[in-house]
Length: 361
Image: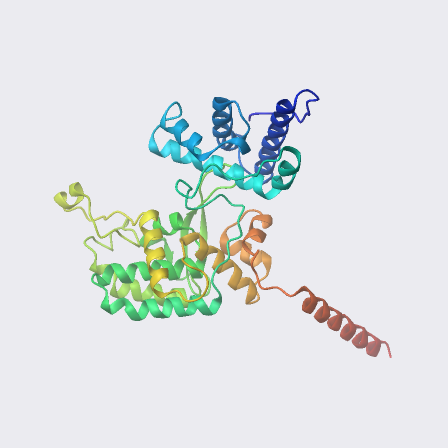
């Protein structure tokens, strides 16, 4: 990992500004390390910042959007995906600067901290510094009710039903988009637990790679998935009874598969699932949250189950998290009332004292 020493230069003002910039970069690395990112990943987050600043011989808060455009259209030009990942990394670093150093930079150097990645080029999801606020339980209930009512009117009813079931299962079980898309029909175990469970390839912790885990269906999920397999899954152009058949197939078969009449259809890809959830939320989701995406369904699952009485450990197990600290981040928007909790705890303590005093008589 790129290492930096924390130091302050007593030389010229530009040197002081650069030294402060290096300090913030080091702090950013430590913050990402504390979040559990691997050294190689942290390296990729800071290198684009160093490259752009070294090219213009300036500090990040002096960069302008047109400079960044010229750099990535000229000396920094790479493959489109590479450029996008670098722009995302730079914008993520600026989100960190805005959160922790905007005031100090303004006082010391008279500069406003504003990302050179302006709205025209900004990635859709800006790092993990913002608070993801899911819709309320009532809004989610209305969203799925309206969506289901519209299914018979869909141009491709089987595809519409598949998309609806995927979104509802994602919300009930808290699985990630990539995990859900990879589920096969044989991964569903109806006999497991109280309502059945299904196997997913979960995300590994600390770079350990994917690891298989059980995801929960609950009563609603079991009934919904049973209906989908009985009435909908057979409408797609493959063999749902094949041992490798995916649970949520794509409607489009690759040319080679269709020509050979192969029994296995490819799975829906996460990008398609994201677009579907976004489109449906714009049509059917009430309330202040403008749109949904799969990971916000995961946040909604965690938040709503915790509000309904699940313990932190149970929510952690539901989401498949290795660390409780990760689960806590998903509950940042939980509607909590510490004063009410304190009053209720005091009441329970007083009741115990009365009960214990009575037992001593």
